[in-house]
Length: 48
Image (cartoon, rainbow, N blue to C red; front, side, top):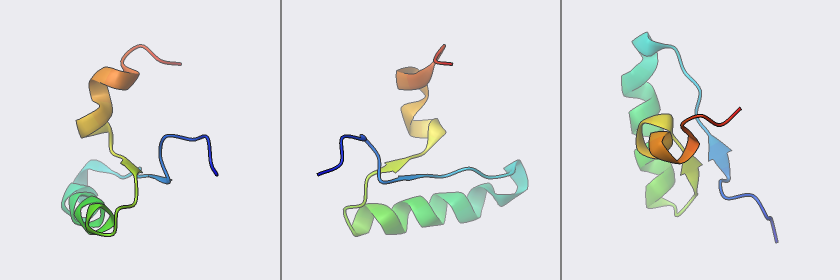
């Protein structure tokens, strides 16, 4: 069992935002825990 809170982290260039959002939605439908900064921004604010 993994001790990491996320299965996948999504990193992308701003011009690829729509693709990243689509991927995140697809992962959510499959119950795959995904780190997407727009949703987890307050959790990682100030984190090095």
